[in-house]
Length: 108
Length: 116
Image 1 (cartoon, rainbow over the protein chains, first blue to last red):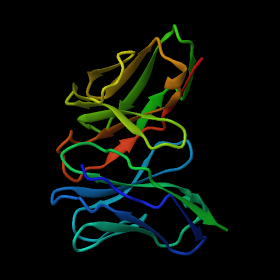
Image 2 (tube, rainbow over the protein chains, first blue to last red):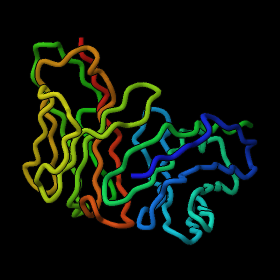
Image 3 (cartoon, helix red, strand yellow):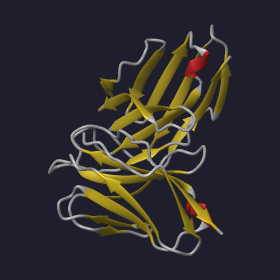
Image 4 (cartoon, chains in turn red, orange):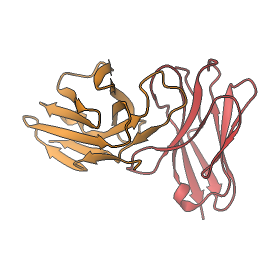
């Protein structure tokens, strides 16, 4: 499975959009990009996933570059409850291996 | 029902004890996973069960023994653990085993294990 690189930490003002980047330059054609988040001491929570096209659901949007070497998770209106560690994962014919993640802190 | 239920939520055990962690899902998922998570680290994959058969063991010490009695249940039997095994143990399930494209995994809330 391809490895991912994420910033260690980010801050975002409450009510603003949070844009979390992820690099996955070695991704192969049949590997999906997944995003999970983990709020302190809880189990990881699925957010969104995609292959090539941009995706949107009730939680977030996922923007994948045309060459698929990077992606951005967008939380359109961050709230204090969005403070968590966000994991970008590339999943192929294998299982969910987590990278180090980005600790997002939403500031009032 | 999109829940993965883990019991107990907290467990304290001595190094000579035998205990078990339990995980249950009723989503009809055919893949189930055990992860170990140390403080401030990402979850690390331990075991994968596909269609109730062990398909992946990530070189986990034999003091951890997984069991999948049926498609809804996953156990992790613990024996002669060390203090460094203290961690959050997470169970997850997904619709398809490895090779299942585009499916998400659902995680339980974990069992926080302390070995004394």
